[in-house]
Length: 283
Length: 350
Image (cartoon, rainbow over all chains, first blue to last red; front, side, top):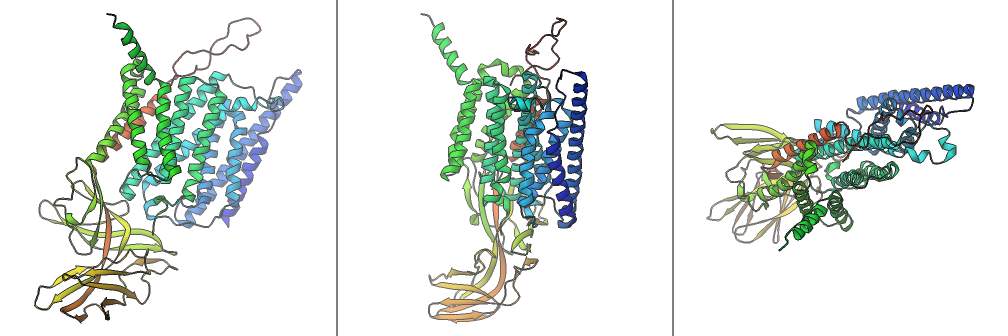
């Protein structure tokens, strides 16, 4: 009951954040009074969005903690738990980057639909508790989950940065957004985040292999989840290599990264719940 | 004779074959192998191996031809570690053994019982490795969902002392580099003795199908030395594992063993005997059997070490300050006409 209330409140705050990031920014205006007013409105909107995100994260953390306490295990078993924990981690990683990187402010408009999709999916998912397989009773589970969430979060930040110029194409939208940083700076930032996402994706595969060796006596067996994880890793490696080869525009790089993100999204939220893989435990 | 031209053409070809764009082809081949495996439902490994070999070869040439890689130590270490991983993974296949064995409770492991695949350079067989499984408990949640496995084992160490341990999920038995993992494949094993008239007694265990996976067909044949077949079935009054409540795998309290030999049908309790033409069959007792996954792979610690080296080198490469030209595109000039100063970082290479 408490968990449901906390989760509902958290989803409400995520929604509020989505509405508040649409506040117009402080674009140059002909009159100083207008400029000051716009700047004040933009500042208030950004602050309110940040507060809404912080509140959502606090409430969501409490909801996860209450569920953890009541079930005796973390959010690792069902689709509902995977959606909940990844919504939380994506919001946290993006929130930290959003707070620390001035260039990312308008990027919330790209990341928020992803968070909204997860939140909506979470709201209609079955919250019934699942069974924690015996193979999950290991510290490697926590490490695996941590690096996986960092990978997806950093990739979302990279996609948001690289696709920023797309938001500035329609004039009506560009008027509401902060000025676009230089393409070189955007490209460098997006590449930096994508590269670190690659580091954590690599670590995800290594920890996963270590876990599989411990649990099932083989470090790699090309089961569906392993195959799709490898495809995600290869896709990101291809995107980074292709960028080094062709020096594409940030938006082009962003489109490639979006493809990798979609692949990672399917690997995280699709494959484990449709395949009969050893990851689910056996009778 | 001018040899410079062919040498130059050869070098150009090598440079093209090892370029960053050629690496894309190699990476694409790795991905295509995995996709092809998924789409066709065929094993990925045979498709993946040639693509990985192509990538490794391409990387070797790149290391030999492109000196720029050697100027970026972190990137160099990452690529060398990847290359070593590919070689070691292939070497590991040749040096390793993967197999399985079913062991009756109280019966020592024999090398002949282990079935599996030995690599080309592996001696094969478990040699003198031996241990005894002394029974196990497995927790079950409602809905027959398997929980923790606790399997008691004992063995004699090199000093002749008996050692005991409890193995299970995440805790394989490791003896002289051989790893024995418990599996979901386990069940009941009725122990039978065949006492032929005037001959030596033969005792054996019949491994019934895995339980509770095949709870409804707990029957199997046992061949006698004279070629006749004894068909046995475990008849349980109630399932030892309650599917509606928290439960555990255990030996059933009340049960009978149904025996069929030709026209003969008998129901036996533990310790009971039935006369058949030419001798007597004794149902001694009911035990358990456990299926183990057997692995011997000396490359494992090296693979882990190299993987960590690769990830650390990659992190080192990503964390370095961005290189390359520190330039900003000039899109506007200040009103006072002063030249723009680059304040941001340029586009990093790689």
